[in-house]
Every structure is written in structure tokens, then in C-alpha cells.
Length: 495
Image (cartoon, rainbow, N blue to C red; front, top):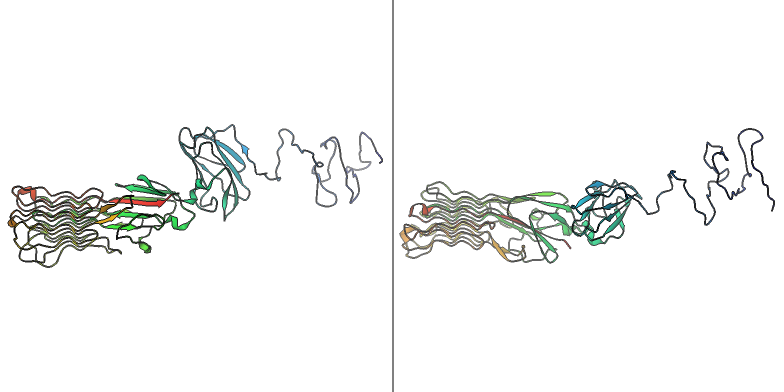
């Protein structure tokens, strides 16, 4: 093999030095090519005279960039540049190709992923082993997906780390390292709001007042996004002076098949108008209050207020009728009972107003036995009408009872909601007792006065029970009582 050793190879004429001819390989060993030693013909780029492949280094060699130099166009190798000089302690937006140490000692926060592009990569790591006490949320950009579903990833394990690579619009960001699917929000619903309890694999959110049910992530499996719910409106107030019992607030329920429990007879699944399929957003909750009972006058009792969750509205219970007026019970989710001395027709306030299917409540009691009865009629309940009038002037006959409510175990134990209020006693019947409230929070009516007159009982709070009616005689003992407030319960599968 021949060998030529010279200090300098230079062009005899012009500025181009050609080493080798077309089709030949030129091998350079030892020292590197420097800009002062070698000038390429296209302004500084190393090019191939023939063909399209340029090989840097030989097998086993290492190609190094000089200190301060940077590279473009070579792509990444599945690694990130860890930002050790910037420990994250609050919500921030990540950049492609970077890894972050996240310190949640002072509280949970969110890492917002950058807009996805094929091959983009981001990593996060628990900085000081605090993810178990204060979790880190990893959220996609806009509507982009994570692991094929819309939602977030919650990192809540001590020392946990995660690397995500963006693939395409179908899968979005894929967790490729150190993440279990139990951490992925798209597997099940993630939500906050109200008082949260658990029962088996289900979470239960209970709202006894206004609030917001906030869904931060939905389930990849569509049926898991249909939530079970109970929506109960406020009960109506009881009537005055042998008045009718206040009606129960409307009761509406849906039991999703993925959340096992014993539902009430009012389960409206699978009817589309009754179902609520959640998405990642906030759902304002309105819990209706109970209506006031009729005071010591002929002023009408008050209807309960509506309760609202998403597309579901339960109507407040109708108020009970009063003596001397207005005698008729009012319509509502359930209907109020008529007062004593009312004509035979009409018979009680209408229930299920406005109409729903299944019916959200039943009518109030009315008079069916003239000329008088021993007290006002019972308020309508969620599953049974208020009791009608009793026999005329029969001693010791109890005033009519409120209608029965509906029992459900959506809260993990059986509870009745939506009982109608009892009718007020009538003094001409002697020691007649007042009407009992219906199961589900209905208030008992008061006995007739003067002695031993009693006050009507208020409907139980957060059951939608109707207020008890006042008996006649005994001055202000004859006033009706208020209905009970409503409630919203939401149940879904979380694991």
C-alpha cells in the first residue's frame, strides 16, 4: 500500500481541491477536519460528490460536539433534557424535550403539556417524594388525548415519575415509562364537589346546598360516564286551620348499570331524557328549599323550590290548602292536600307538574265523603297520593296522612325521600289526632286546639318532605309548617 505524507495539499489553480474521483471512497483518519484546513465547495457543508450518504466516523467511534455547539435535524433518542436548575413548585406549561422535577410539598399543582407533535417527549418526576400527599396532575393541551382518551393523569404515588411521547391524534400522548393505568384519569371519572364518600368501587357526591360538581376527567369506556343521580326538590308548606298537608318535592332518580345499588321505583334508566352523561366541565347544583307553611291568616302556603342537576329538574312540592281560603292544595312535583270543608271536586292538588316519566310525584288528598271530614287532607308523596277525607264528624278519627315517599340506597344505605305532609286536625271531631307525615320526611299535622293543641311538624331537611298542616282552633297553633329542603346525590364508578 502506497503512502503520501505532506504538510499541505493546495489547489494549483483556483479555490477547489478535489480528493478522489467519482465512485471512490476517501478515508480520513487521525485529526479532524477543521474549517481552516478544509473548505467544501458549497460554502462550508460537507457534501458527497457522488451519491447521497455521508458517514461520519467509523464503527465504534464517538461523534462529539464541541463545547458550546448545538445540533439540529438529528432528532431525539427517547430521552429528555432534565431541567435540574428549575425545580417546579406551581402550575406551568412543559416544553418538548424537557424533563422536570416537581415539588408538591406546598400543595398539588398541574403540568400542562405542550401542543402535541409526532415524537414530542416530556417527563416529570417527584422531586421530594410528596406526590402521595399532594398529587401532580398532567393535563393535555386543549382536547388532545392521553393514552387514547380525553382526560388527565393524576400522579399520587410517592416517588412516581412519568414519561410521555406524543404519537398522533388517535392516541395522543402515550405514557411509555413508570406509569400505571390506574393513574390515568381517562380510565374512570375524576370529579370534585359536595361531600364525597365511597362505597365499593363507587364514589358518592352529596349536595345539601348549592355547589358545583366538577368533572376533571371522563372515562375511556363510555358507559362509565353515565352517572347515577338522585334529584329531590323542596317540599311544600302545610295549610292553615285544618289545612291540607304540604306536598313532597319532586323525586327523580337514575341508576347507571355500572354503579350497583338498590334503586327506588322511580329509576328512570335508560330513558334518554333522564340520563346524564358527563363531560369534563363543571355542573352547577341548585338545591331547592322548602316552602313556608301558611301563617295565622288566610295567606296561602308556599310551594317548595326546584332542585337542578345538569338537564334534570325536580319541581317543588305544592302547598297545602287552608281554611277559609284558599281551600285547594296547589300543584307541584307532588300535589298539596285540600283543606277541610272543601267541596268534593276538585280532589287535591295535581302531582307530577310539570310531567316527567316516571312521575316525579303524586296528587294531594281530596274530599270524597261529604259534608265534612275530620281534618285537612294529606299532601302527595313521591310514590303515593295524599290520603283523602275521612268519615264526617266521627269521634277520634285521625286526620288524613301524607303520601309515602321513595326509598333508595344510592347513598350506600336505604333512605326514604319525598314524603307528603299530614293533614291538620278538625276540632269538631273531638279528640281527633292529626295526620301523620308520609315516609320520607313528611311532617305531621297539628292537633286541633285549644288544648292540647300542638304545632305542625316541619318536613325533614334534605328529604323534600312536605310540611305538616295546622289544626283548627287554638290561635297560632293552627298555622302550617314549612317543607323540608331538597338534595342531590351523584354516584359513579371510580376504580
